[in-house]
Amino acid sequence: MKKLNVAIIGQGRSGCDIHGAYFLTEEGQKLYNVVAVAEWNEKRRERAKETYNCDVYEDYRDFYKRDDIDLVVNSTYSYEHFPVTMDLLNHKMNVIVEKPFSKYAMECEKMIAAAKENGVMLCVFQQSRMAPYYQRIKEIIKSGKLGKIHQININFSGFARRWDWQCSQRFYAGCLLNTGPHPMDQALDLLDTDDMPEVFSVLKRINSSGDAEDYAKVILTYPDRPLIDVEINSANGYSDYLYKIYAEKGSLKATVYDIDWKYHEDKPMPALTLESLCGEDGISPAYCSEELTWHEEHETLEGDAFGYGPMVYYQNIYDHITKGAELIIKPEKIVQQIKVMELVHAQNPMELKF
Image (cartoon, rainbow, N blue to C red; front, side, top):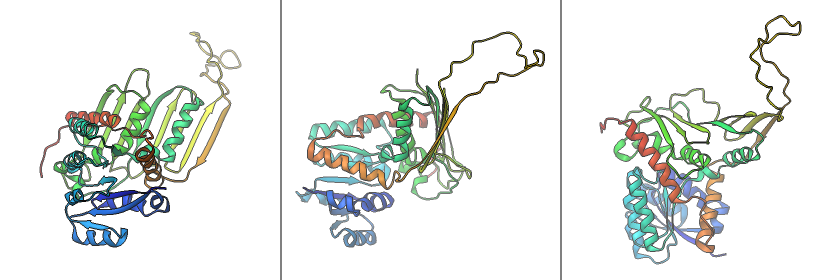
């Protein structure tokens, strides 16, 4: 089996702890060789040299002196995603760019156009779509056991205070662009339309030292689709679920590792009566009451978006480059996500302070 030679730009949380960690796994080493790393921090650069047994550079543009790189992973700061990716594409390199794709849809469209013009691959690292909990939720919805889905709540929350670059608007930061691509990608996949949905949103800054938001509420609606409520909340000390689904015949709740759902048998709804309801004595007032047969199911899952997700994602990338397989994550679909988040930022302008 031919291995693909990979170069990584950046050895921060993403470049080192997600992409780099995957390439060191047994599965990753079957498909990929890390042959080069670019990192401005000298200590991290030296660590990368030892970790991957590869060449290291301070400047990613030194990659252009080589002819053995099959794929470049762009794990730079968010505000660098667009210029660095454009540079790589115009040097005819296949590129995986970290989320967010960019802050602006126009920049995303330019990257897509550049990839097509240069005949190379462009993909966005949205591995949460491959997470076992999400794939199983989609299967349960598709089964029809819950009936018509009316509302989906997606909650990526917890209690945390933050003071790093992910608090700075200048760095294209804030919870919507940092955490948001994960739930927003899933939400728009579930909404299942290429059209722009209606968007209601609120952004706030609660526990951040910077000027970017750390609270986001985004409600998406589209005709004949469920309402989808996405919340990212850094002040939620009691977050107990990732998903809640409210449907015609039942409900579902899920965490990363556990899914519970209940549904009743398809029993016809009693006909409307406008007369007062009475109890068994024919006199006492009564509420609507019926016996429904409920089925309750529970599943415990293994794997998550940061362990299992990259494995599935990078297998697809390998198959795409070597066999022409269709990409699971299409950059054109991610443009829709960026358009929604761009609108959310426009609806909630925040003062630039730093």
